[in-house]
Image (tube, rainbow, N blue to C red; front, side, top):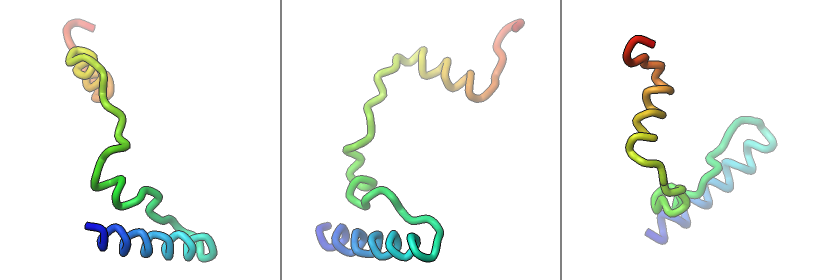
Length: 65
């Protein structure tokens, strides 16, 4: 695992430095952060709040509204 982190971090830095001069995008998150998922905020909403959010985002109309 340490070797993978070392290699991907090196490649990420090369891509970042190249994109600064040539333009373009690069991966902003570190490989370890993506794999470990330690930096993701915990969802503290209740089940009904999550359902309401999904319905709102999907544009679903329920009932006679």
